[in-house]
Amino acid sequence: MLLLALDTATTVCSVALVGDTGVSAEVTTTDGPGDGAVALIARLLTEQGVSRSQLTHVGVGVGPGPYTSTRIGVMIAVTMGAALGIPVVGICSLDAIARGVRSAARGAAGEPVLGVATDARRKEVYWALFDAYGSRVAGPAVTKPVQLLADVHCRSWAGNGFDRYPLLAEQNGVQRLQPSTPSAAVLGGMVIEGLARGEEPRAMLPNVGAHSGDGAGSIAKGDRLLAPYPLYLRRPDAVEPAAGVGVAHA
Image (cartoon, rainbow, N blue to C red; front, side, top):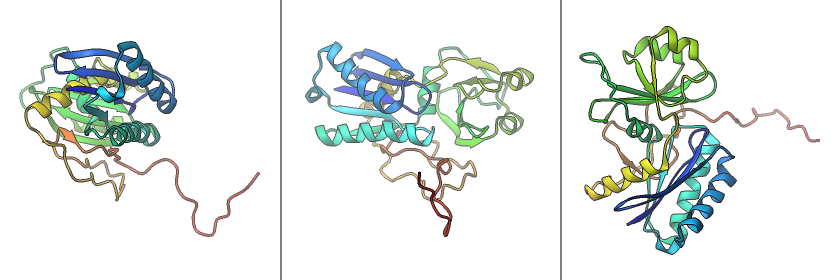
């Protein structure tokens, strides 16, 4: 098995080659997710002497993340899978960050061991909670960071969700852990592990139609391998003009 993995759901675009024996290589960029991801894939394959025909799977972070960047990464993965005739498997990007945490973050009795939060813009964060075994026990969801820390009894957080709110994090005793963004190498390893265990990607399209913005996660706690659809938790920033409102032209 030789898997190309990518994630564009945060400020970093990460691409990796992962095989049964481990990670071959990983490259990242903070360039735009579209051209950045395509260029990274071409560079990685060239540097490793791997042709696209050698790939057996594509793994992709499905978010939650900004509407456009998350969608671009998923569409690149799906397009590659269709062109090459190989399976495409999604992973929640917050799950990949949690797997990448190397520090042992122990919570008090009854508390989640680890929280992951990423910047959702609009003064909100995407978040999920994980137990001592790395299993997601709450989320993914989206809310304001003040409300999150008031409602959730967890003080160890990975991800970049509190980068904009350092004072808030300090006041609430938040222990900020690395990584701050998903690693495609970690993500790819999760796909290979899941497939080796005989897991099947969640076949149904996540509940993205309502876009209610109420913070309710659209995947179940036990879902690890996902269908390659962007995981939207709220409506995109861009909206259609109201009926009867004209569009100005330059």
